[in-house]
Amino acid sequence: MPESYDDYMWEEQVKIERRNEILRAAADGKLSPEAAENFAAVEQLGPFAKPASRDAYDPRSRQSWTIEMVLVWIISRDFEQVIEFDEKYRRDCIGWHEIPFEPKANKNGYTPGPRKWPHVTKWELRGGHPATISEVSAASVDFKKTKMSFVEAKNQLWECLVSGSIVCSGFNIESKRIETIDEANWLHLDFRKTKKFPIEIKSSFLPLGYMGMRFSKDEILSNWGRNVGATEIFNWEVILIKARELVAENKNEKRYTVAKLSAHLLAHFSDRKDHMQDQNAKHIEPSLETLRGQIRKNNIMKTYR
Image 1: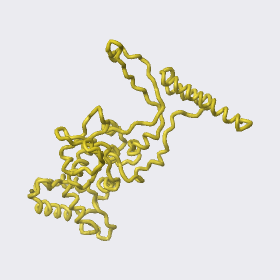
Image 2: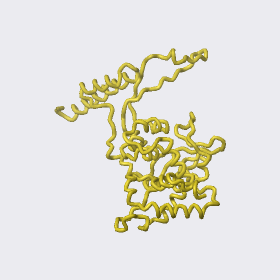
Image 3: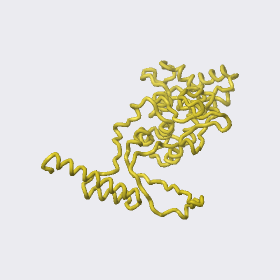
Image 4: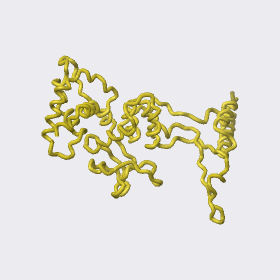
């Protein structure tokens, strides 16, 4: 224990200088993250890598989700997985990251290729980068439980965006403004790889592109609830009869999609019990996902149009 405040401050300054010395050695490629952490433990400097507390990043407390969080939720229905792709959580998780080597041209303008790059790995201590769509696609294969594949989740999300049952806002790359993305635009938008923007949804032939998309968490959870079970209490005969009636009524509408039909069914049976087998049971609405599955399973759109 230091005998005085001055002694304490001096010891703290020594620790700070020693930590900076270890960080510089890692940045020069002289120490690996494991070696740096070992030095810190032996010298009682405290750990360098510090993961953020997951309790402070409950996605249920957030008003809006990024598109990566939305896709992870649709695929896994696991809030713990969604946290892993929360950009705020990633930024606050301090960890070791490899410093990418950037070759520089010599005085003759020659830039060496990868074979001539130095075989030294350099490290820096910082927060994590925002999640990318590629990471969601790759990580979804390793999720403990999945409701569907990445492609199926993306198709369902686009279906809801085109039908207007879900609203999304984003930064318009052309106008440089944040705006609500019109549902008709989603027919032309898809993920695009660019060097300028790490996360972008763009049209391949129109001057139309967005980044930083945000979705209402409540809308996502209402469309893809955590528990999609309990379908055994629904009287699907009643529900599918109404579905056929709605398809017949809208047979001349070219864009009457499965998503739009599902939304109409949900609105029709809201606060009603005539779709339930047990009329004494607590009122439960079938989720939009469950409705879409039953519509496809019974070929409602193909048979009655």
